[in-house]
Structures are given as structure tokens and as C-alpha cells.
Length: 302
Image (cartoon, rainbow, N blue to C red; front, side, top):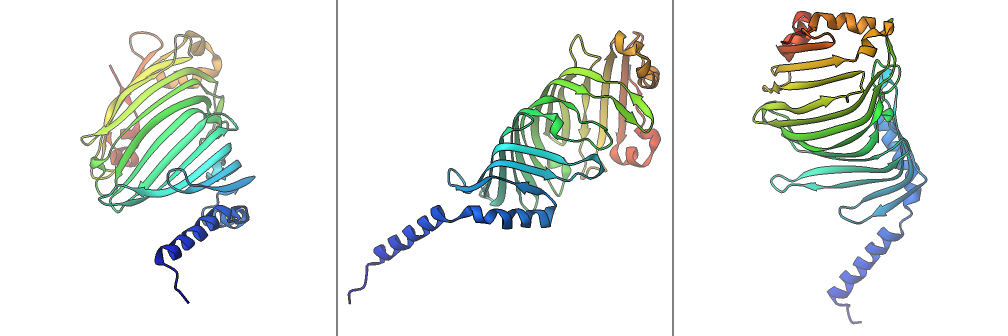
């Protein structure tokens, strides 16, 4: 009996693997996969459909997805999207390191979200892209209601695990229709703050995390302001030094609201020569601010 050629055998094996991948009943993996994720992370996932995608790095494509991420007392992050794609790949060459990316399109509460992260022994790298992402989907610990607004963000980071000062990155974050809902913090009632727009840019380079741009508010906002300064990064966060200045302006309407009395009273210490204008600054290491309440209290900025 004549033996088949090696090329024929390899071709047969290749076709078998191809059809196995293409025809495999991935739908049957949903329950097992989602159960495994929940067991190890407490993240609860449901989806109507699960298939393989081979465009770019291989991954899984899910339709009609609901993701619940536990966040403790502040509530859970609830994300629902029409389509979610999760991919695994290899980043870099020297050294190569594993990466995972997640894209969620047409989120139920608004926007699209993309995130990619990879980890090696000495660093964690990642990138972010958010398009009209609704902040209502992210609960804030200590706040009775979530923030409101739509976020546009993009950027990257290279977080050094052995020496923080070698971290680099750049993040652009803009928000529209931004509003802080009424809050009751341990009996202190704060009225709603209508801010409107936020424009910010953070750059990490040469051992500094610099606030390149930070502006909030519009001419009709309850509060307007700017922030400037930097975090001089040490070997770790505790040894890093914060130099930060915050300038704020409260509208006449907001200052005259009796419900704003608590916030206005606090800011009076930092009022400039112009009523309604305030300046606050911080100059201390993170360790000092965490261990000494006096260092954590802002000083008056000229």
C-alpha cells in the first residue's frame, strides 16, 4: 500500500483543525466559561450569543451582553452592550508579554468602550478609548447617586512595577453635560452641581505626572475652575510628592442657595479678593498626606 505524501497528511490535518475551529459549538461553552469567570472573579456575565472571531488576534465575540462587576458598598458596575469582543494576544518582542483587549460597542446606557492591557515582570502597559461613554454606568463609593455626563477619552500608559518614576503615558479626557447630583454625605447635604464641560490632559514623563490641561465649567455653570500642578513620582506612590493648585469660581446663584451653605462656608477660608473666587493648593508627599491630617488639608493659593 502506497503511503500518502507528507504534504497530503499536513493538508488533511490542517483542514480538520480548520473545520473543528469553525464548526465547534462555542455556544455550549457559555455556561462553563461564565461560571468559571464568576467563580474566580465574582463578575457575572450573560450573553445571547458567543462565536469565534479570527480577524486580527483570535478572540470571542458576544452579542447582547450584560456584565455585573461587584464594587462593594458603592454598588456594582452594570454594563450592557450590543456587541463585545475579547481577544488575547502577544505584545512586544523584547520581551514578549501576554495582552488582553476588550471592546464593548453600543452600550445600553450610552457609548463605546475599548481597553487593552498587557503585563510583563517589570511593567503593565495599556491603552484606552472611550466614545460618548455615560458615567451613569460607574457608581462612585460614598455617593448616593452616580455622576452624570458623557466622556470622550483616549490614551496609553506604561506603568513601571519596580520604579514608579519610570512610568510614562498620556491620557486625554473630556466630558460634556457633566453634573454632580445632590448628595447627603453623613448628614451634610450638598445640592446639585451643574458643571457642563470638562477638558483635561495628563502626561507622565521624566519622573513627573503633569496636569497639562484641566478646565471645568462653562459661563453658565454652577462651578468653574482650573487645576495645575504635578505629581513628582518617587520609587513608589508613598514617596511621590504632590504639588497641586485648584482655582474655583462659584456662580452667584449657587452661592446664594441656602442648601450650598456647607460648601460655601468651607471655601470661605480660601476666598481671594474677588467674592466667589477660591484658590486651594497642596504641597506634600503622599506619605505625609496619608499619615498627617494637617498635610492633607489644602492651603490658600494666591
